[in-house]
Amino acid sequence: MSLNQILPFVSSFIMLVFTVSVLQRWVLRRKDHFLFWGIGLAMFAFGSFAEAYFAFGRWSMPVFFIWYLCGAVLNAAWIGHGTLLLLVRKPWARGVTIALILASMAATGLMIQAILRTDGAAYVSGVAIGEQYRNLMPAIGEGGLVRLTTPFFNIYGLLTLVGGALWSAWLFMRKQVLPHRVVGNVLIAAGALSVALAGTLTRLGVGTYLYLGELVAAGLMYAGFLTAARPATQTEVEQAKSASAA
Image (tube, rainbow, N blue to C red; front, side, top):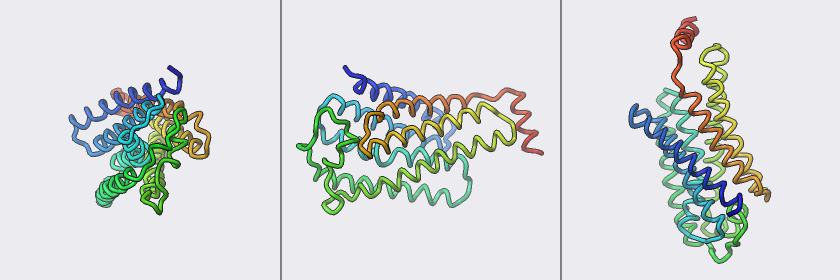
């Protein structure tokens, strides 16, 4: 078994544990941001597992459907939207939530349309799925309209996740309180940027670092979540209250 066959499985396992941790918090607290984080992370895990499947050189139409819809299209937007819901309490955020759900349903419909026209015979064993999916899917004008949706979902996800994490880190750092949350948010932002960079390189034809980038992203984001979620000490709580009152 090669390294490229092992790494996606490791990423999937980390993201699965991460997903369970987040959804447990949603069950206990019933906060919407935990639900969107959990769903987005589950999509990330499904996408990584699909890559692990393809790393063994086997073609599967259902697995490709999961890989593209969950891994390439939706997961970043849902994770990033969770961060938006955590930081924004304005009424318009609910409208964005509805828009994201409707857009995701539309993307799913377009993916169904595309998968029916996907050419599995063009699959090349031994080549990362991220490097060859364009040769498998139909052109935009021939039923591949779902390909037009990926930039919008991914840009939204990157801006909300990375921007939200860095904004939170800046707020805590400026007030000089809860330093573990500063570190946690920086780790989350770094994880999101690493997978975005790996994905960009793959689309440019450099797929060597895709699986490693996803593993690094999974590890950094989970470490960031655990760090930021660590209970504050009594001293830290008092310092935060003082900073808020100042």
